[in-house]
Image (cartoon, rainbow over all chains, first blue to last red; front, side):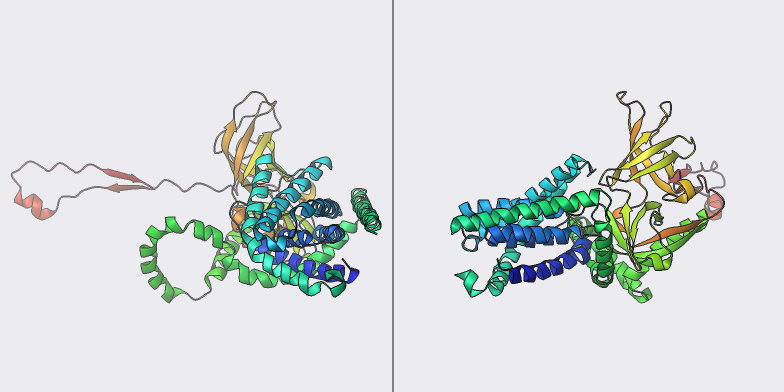
Length: 173
Length: 322
């Protein structure tokens, strides 16, 4: 991943973050809310190589740390999403190219979203944060991954297209 | 070459992880990177949220409406008739009307309590990925709002102002797991702490080991020093379940909040408090039982026609309770 692409992705992710904070979070989804930002970020991370996955994870995490409603220490999301990016990159190699298998992509993103939130909660516990009851948190994770599972198929073509636009010929080779 | 690439990746991974840990450490040590950057983000987001709010206000409850579609089917016929009648009376947009009703309610509550309030519209809700229960309102420091001010709606307490920018503020809701408020049981004056649970239920923990809680007990806020973050006497909720187990030192109970935090359109921030504590006067009173008596009266024609017959027995009194 070139630094130019990292810059383009940063701007793109910030726009998605604004949409998430201003619009998506206003919708009262049943069970629990849907995080478009997390779905898009995980989608982009899963399409990248190892280097790109954790760089995107770090940038995406820093943007998510800017969330005004967040009560967590600044840098927590950056740390978690860098780790998730690394996990994605190492596991992705065994799965292969997602663009040929949309089903795997959707399931991977959905599980990734659940895993990310779970790691976020576990880090919160380690840092002594109070995140509420276990049941409510599990319901939030379940609801979010369910919505991700439903919306990821709509996002996939757009993400693949966006990636192919931003990628240059040297990276393509 | 590949090994070189791998080493570069590993080095970058370590740098990124160390940077993230460094940022967390700085934040936990009280260096305000987060506060300043989040405040700047909030200042940027507030106008966008305000713009989206107008559009998303009617569609925000779309999924809830779809879920209740089956239940509502039976009412559709009645509503269609009523709708035709109401169409003639409709002057204002229904959304605005709803907000006006809520505003009326909240001003009524503030008036009874002698509070000086600033009304605000809810323009955003906490992100799904942060596990926090917050709302964003379209009033900020330029309207006189400061951190740690109490936020109410027409039913009672909603939350506390967590952070403020010039034109917006973030309110931490009562339902947030980190939310704690000192409460008093109206009537008995027993004090306790109400804890947010991340949903619409709250846990009440009494401070006095000899104190008792009853089902239906109304809770009001105890108040804080200089009325920040909580002003006294605000309705909080009512006891819905009492835990009778003897394992805890003090009695605990489940509480249902008076304020419905899922449908917040308009709220008010208490900026000043009157000299007198409203005590228990703001606790919502249940609707009084209405008793209707229907007594049958014999008509004069019927009595003349049957003048020789014995006097009619009066019909039993019908007692209808609402």
